[in-house]
Length: 372
Image 1 (tube, rainbow, N blue to C red):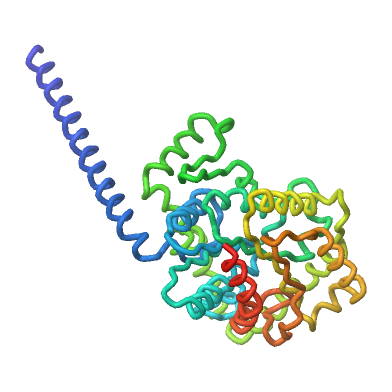
Image 2: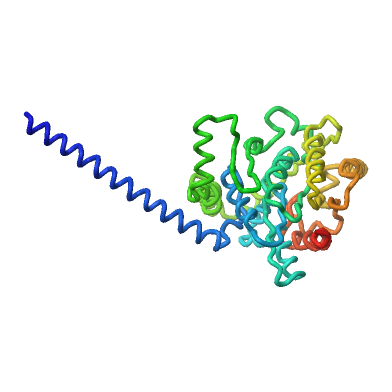
């Protein structure tokens, strides 16, 4: 009996010993991967890729790349026009190189050869002024030379002052990154789970990069990737009906846009207007050079969205909200140089449209940089 107990005890110690060795090996492997990723990933420029940001950790990964850049830094914030993925949805496989941020990057490289510059794309689908307010707050500690963001009248629709509709990413409310790059998603909420997450993001590079890499490689997540494969297979099987489906999607999009535009209201009690006003105060108090633009709608479609007189009145109100403009804040728009042929739908641009937009904004951006 005694010998049996000794045998069981010996086996128990062996199991614990093997478990400890396994854990030690796993920790060592993860540490090696983490160190390699810290060296290789930033050097490859992978974190400069345009992704659909859907989590605070993914945004933080982009922010850290931007914060640590030693050179001229321009942060481009905004909605789907800034993000640019509508080009991909319309068949542009090289869409990431055709976005406004990349076109401005190329513009600066041509105008200032030898000058290190980084134009970062922080565009997110559906961004509203309430989201933009948080984005500006989060980006400011990274000390950009210039912040660029777009506005659209659609964002001031009364549809977006309803409960649950006033923000597209509620997690932006609690996200903060200080000037040293310390990440926090809210000290007062979440308990041990939130604290553990923040600590892992700050100290474990692999954990921090996970969401970004998933968004880059799987369009958000492995599940989204599989859904995309399924949809691609469906389109291939439908064959010639795909074009009709795209036309139907465009019609539905236009109908939804018309409903939004009918409810545009720039009254002082609109929470989206209030968020814009707070954002303007924030950049002014920080003396942050800021270039704001309104790319305008497809001139062919605009009459179906708003009467010309109403559009002019709303634009005048928008200019009044943004004014008075200190020297470090410039407003451009609405742009009239973009022809209907360079629009993919009522607001999104193609490669040529982004090139034209870059040509319009580039000289203003250059002037702001020159005053720094």
